Amino acid sequence: MNQQKLKQVLLYALAVGTAKLSLAGCYPLIPGLFGALLLEEVNRTLLLIFTLFGMALFLPVQAMAKYGMIVLVSAAAVKLIEWAYKSCRTWIGAAVCAASAMVLTISGEVLQIRNRNSIWMGILESVFVFAFVVVAAPLLHAFLEGGSIRGPKKQTLVKAPENGERLQSYAESFNGLSRMFSQMSRQKDGFALEEMGKMQQEITGKICISCSQCALCWEQENSPMYQVFYKLIHSIEKLGMPDVEVNRELSEYCPFAREVTEEAVGVFEKARLNMAWYNRLLENREVIAQQLDAMAYIMEDCAKEYVDISKEEGKMLASVKYRIKERGVNTQEIHLYEKTNGRLSLQMMLSSKWGNCIPVKEIAKDVTDGMHKRMVPSKNCKTLVGKEPSLFIFEEEPSFSTLHGVARLAKDGAQISGDNFSFLDLEGGQTVMTLSDGMGSGIRACKESEMVIELIEKFLEAGFRKETAIRMMNSAMVMHGEDGMYSTVDMAAIDLYTGACEFFKIGAATTFIKRGEQVETVSSASLPAGIFSQVEIEKSSRQLENGDFVVLLSDGVMDYLHVPNPEETITEILETIQINNPGQLAKHILERILLFTGGKAPDDMTVLAAGIWER
Image 1 (spheres, rainbow, N blue to C red):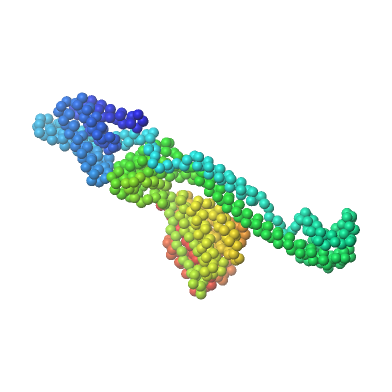
Image 2 (spheres, one colour):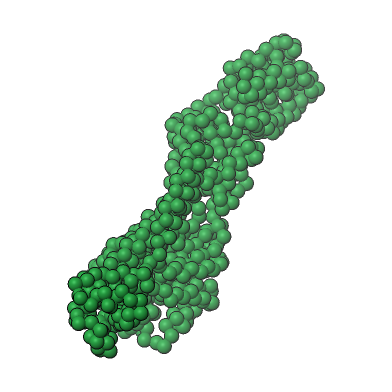
């Protein structure tokens, strides 16, 4: 016999024993315990049998008839309510049991017309039954759920330990490959002494080997030809050809000076070409090393399991299940996880008891009440609980909410803007807005910036860190290999739980933070993405407060203000605008900018604005 069945047997025995307990000639514990267990949905047939059996053992015939009718009427009424409304709340079930007790008691006493004080005892008994059911029902639920929070598993919610270990092993392998690629150092523009010696041997092997003076020039260690060749090689390395003085000195010692010089220049050109291709190969390997590092990070992150605190929070989860049960929803499996950022995630397998559809928003209210913490359905959660069991995830609601707005203009004469942007909500309570300005304008610039935005979005949605997503995007642009394919990247990532905002800039214009009439700037001096394999990301962070606005601008907004200090001008504009709508704020900024350009758009202009407010 498992623990759950043993608890039910104890409750059935308690239902039998209540018939032996009386208060002032009444037996209120019989309908009270029966009603509480009835709402808990134990085996109702067995509950009724054991309750009637207890009354048959210990109650007089008249009392047995009265309380037998009370439990039968209560069971029928609760069943009818559940059929009509697809659920039965505790207070409704308690009211049904109390009303049954009061009506039957009063009816019996009126018919007997003996002791009218018994009518008041019946009223007090019904009040006791109501209070007992309301108090006992959640306690009995907690008793039955204690130590069995997880319930029967139909879908595994916890990651298998062996899978985590396997992912960790894969991550270590990718890290090892990345280190191997990174250990290959790139050659500089100059040549090492060993390489110069090989070039000298190649030149002499082709020219000097057929000369009758070869032995005189090279067999003696103090031969002047060693010094002359050294000057020749360094002269070609520096100028691309030997200077006049080196040519004159070489002609004094070598009858084939012109042939030696031509061969040396050819060898050096071939060596430079080989160096360029080798460095290009190493550059691609550096890109691959970065991608391997990123893959290793993702695998390590996937290998990290959330901390399952279901057993520690068993009472709280029992309270959640009780509230959900009252709404007519069965909970087949439930887990509470603490994520790496300290936030809670509740995962449940839910199904509708009666086959009807129940809005998840209603379930979220019960979860919030049970956990005493504001919980909301996750981003990809279903909106309705149906007959078939499904996985539902509830996350802690962030402390802040955001609204976004954008205003943009294409360059005069251009059909399409070269700027692209995105607003992305990530798992974990983060919202990210990104702005990319492709080099130039028109369709090509638009395709460049569009590719940048799409790559960053895909990497972020896959779980990569912001820096890693930017580096992966830059690697893709470098490996694409198209000349002039450069784009700026301006990213602001807002943590909606804490209000902290991280800024990532690659060749981007200044960002502005507006707090009432105060304006703060975040500047950058880095180069655009796609130029070098090792991209320089300028990262900074700021703490946002209720009512703050973050404003991102493309280069075209600030480059054509025709003022000595564009940042000061934008700051003055923001200080004078008193608008609480991000869309209207972006529109007003762009309108004020056009006053400086005479209403023209010399370049693509884009303004993004995001406001943050406490919930």
